[in-house]
View 1: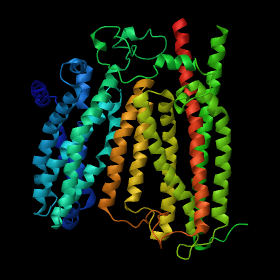
View 2: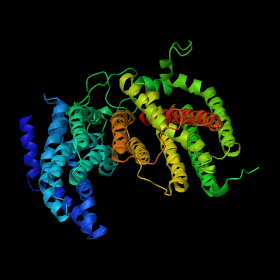
View 3: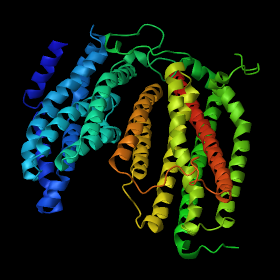
Length: 269
Length: 51
Length: 250
């Protein structure tokens, strides 16, 4: 697992790994908004927490499809799925790497951009804390979305549609935490809820993401599993037997199976 | 026959007309899809029988 | 094949043949009931209810707004249950029913949003308020869109059913969270649950009776469209199987 972590971080920092893109995107979003809104300092100060949070969220979204896509293309995801480490752990590591590469730099840069947006002084601490607490949730939720859409051709756009609604609670509590901090109000409730969302998603979503990955790896894909095609009807390798062909097919695992597709098709057709 | 809707006649009738139109569109879509699928299935079944 | 015997439990309808046979006669009955009850509820509500002393005739929008909002949420709950059944017991009809329910729920959400906007204009002076309930319905609509998009993006039926079920489970948790987040984020203009039992806020029977009828009508509309949609999905699946068999023999 530690080896995987080191490998992924190294890959991300290598040229073409996409590190820095999210950061640049964040910078551009935060620069563009004042041009759209106007230069009034009070207005900017009021909307700064929201801009910073939405910018961070979009920057996270930008790099999500890289979490699994590259590994899926070159087949190393299949190897990871059959490796002795649990797939849930792999997902958690991948999300952690995404956070280290995308989320953490955002946290570091956000106060600087807060200066541009005229964020009130008491809010800086809360901004860093809220992003530090909230961005891991963005990465984990994003890993789930990436796992759902990993096998798809044009998965990126679909993934945004799936992931953005899931980001709503994190965004609400994160931005609320900063604006309450800026106004000097008590921040206990949003702080606790934000932390709850992050810990809850970090604890549970890797399982959902791993389930989705297993389903995606199991799926019959003509390029990967040529031998799976001669099944009597269109479905994957037989669900209750051994995989029929070479190493590319190891990925699938059996979910609980009451009525097999074969039986279903026998009933329908 | 038409009740007196007072000041808000436009809003109330718009709500009813719009909602019923959306419902009708949904029903029409489900119906059309069902019909199309059934026709296509019948064609496939005919072919399957002939063989 | 045990399809001749009497069904001994609800699970028997996971058999598509049995489901088709049942829905063959159930669908017209439910559809008739849906048309009759909805017509009664809406005509009663539109023509025969008095104006509210504060809201004037706009109170009549409630007979569309509340039933559609009810079904928007219930359709998602039904999808959640169907997804669970699919994930746990692998009943294919259940997965197909969840697929068929999504567009219906999306349209119900749209109707609820539309009637709410039209109602909000004269009452609150704005089409759209960032009041907690409105955004949470908008988010629900986005969840429906994502669910439908995921279904249509995946070719393999088994994979699509599995992935959308997982999305539905996770989405339910987050939809609920978003709702609480929205309530936390703004205390709104929206009135609370219209049928709450608190004394004083209770509606008069003159409104309640047609509202209940309209709600029953919308439930039946949902069931009828759901049955029709599931039948279509089963037929589409059968067609796919037949075509695959044809290709094999060719």
